[in-house]
Amino acid sequence: MIRKCLFPVAGYGTRFLPATKSMPKEMLPIVNKPLVQYGVEESIEAGLKEIALVTGRGKRAIADHFDISFELEKQIAGSSKESYLKSIRKVLDEGTFMMTRQREMKGLGHAILTGECLIGNEAFGVILSDDLCVNCDDDGVMAQMVKLYKQFRCSIVAIQEVPMENIEKYGVIAGDDMGDGLFRVKAMVEKPKPEDAPSNLAVIGRYILTPDIFDILRDTPPGKNGEVQLTDALMTQAQNGCVLAYKFRGRRFDCGSVPGFIEATNYVYENIYVDGEG
Ligand code: G1P
Image 1 (cartoon, rainbow, N blue to C red):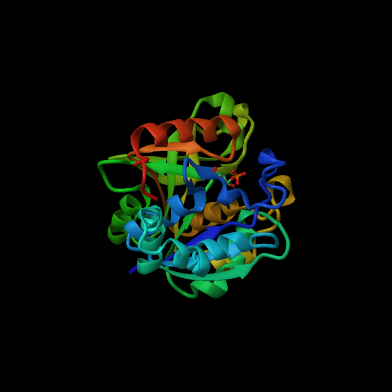
Image 2: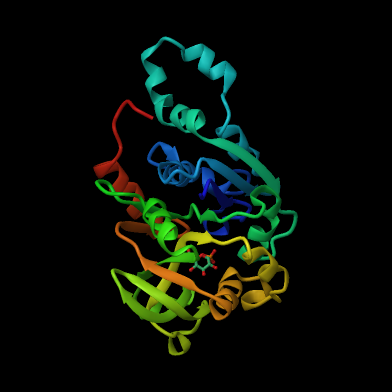
């Protein structure tokens, strides 16, 4: 079954400069936990315990986060402060971590292709940690998608309705409604102008991909903004076979933008954060 989840974490995070000048944007905390840890927890909860990080220069803090911090942990061992390490210790007990570096930023499709050496010939999840998804009393978004994969055995993208004035920020799908929030993808366009968008159904940063995506990506020419777009490769996959789009249950925050980041921070502080626990 699906065991692996790929995290493209090589991006610059320019919208958060100067904070992200020397610190990876994925390490920005929502209250007390870095963004990437929320994504990894969602992956592990879905049973995807082998975490494949596609990192880049200046991203060592991410690798260090998913390791023990020997001096710090020795220092606080046995004290009440140890409770702050609870969540990260759980992640380290349950997950395994592998990484490779993306040397040039040539787009999301290129980042995924760079991760091929970690994934091999099996279906895998992808989480873009900028998109924080929460679903307190229900399965997380990746867990919902894994259930669907078991049934349909094809690539699946998470979607959400967004206002037309924001559609230009997303990959957008058009598809046949199969009921229960599922669509069979007929068209997919990366960051269209509102007048060219095939619908208001935007792709959110959660995917399950079948491994034929790697060969397709190798043959996908640079698209929007001169980057190799995963959206274009998925469109090819949809034409050759089947790609599903799934309107997930839960809330999603765009933590790649300052307003979304603040909204997520307030939401997590009020609904999820537990004082005295990590
Ligand atoms: C990427 C994808 C886009 C998707 C978005 C979701 O864009 O290329 O299709 O809708 O993630 O967050 P980015 O936000 O990295 O520009």
